[in-house]
Image 1 (cartoon, helix red, strand yellow):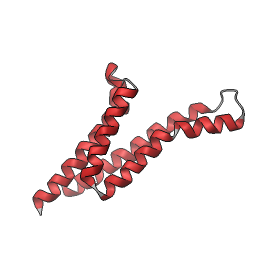
Image 2 (cartoon, helix red, strand yellow):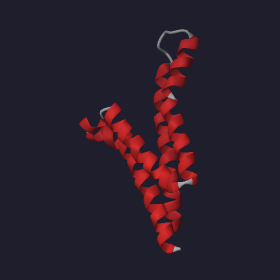
Image 3 (cartoon, rainbow, N blue to C red):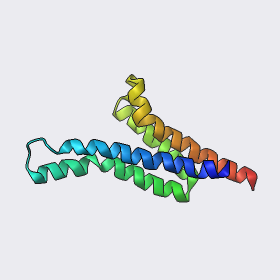
Image 4 (cartoon, rainbow, N blue to C red):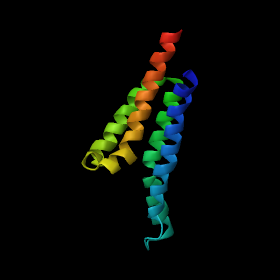
Amino acid sequence: MKFFLTWFPRLVVVVYAVFISLFAADAFGTGETRWQQLGGFLIHLIPTAVTIVLLLVAWRHRMLGGFLFIVWGLVFTIHFATHRSVPLFMMLSFPLLLAGFLFLFSQLYAKKTT
């Protein structure tokens, strides 16, 4: 159980980061200059960068990282209005919320078993 609680939330976040990175590809092929397309690509990667930074925090401090992932999931829910569509919520917000709760639970489980 400890192995699952340690690695599964991290795996969820890594797969999620790769998934949302794919959305950055829509910056290319818009008919703009290469620099404008590169700028759009980098702007689209900001959520991925924030997610990776949160993963690095959660890797070291599971409790803090869990709370931050829950907040990040709520930010996605509100900002992108994923609460209006179940499939959209399940793709964009739920993995962040799941990872947050798993990080919290893994920390609580680790304290309980020691």
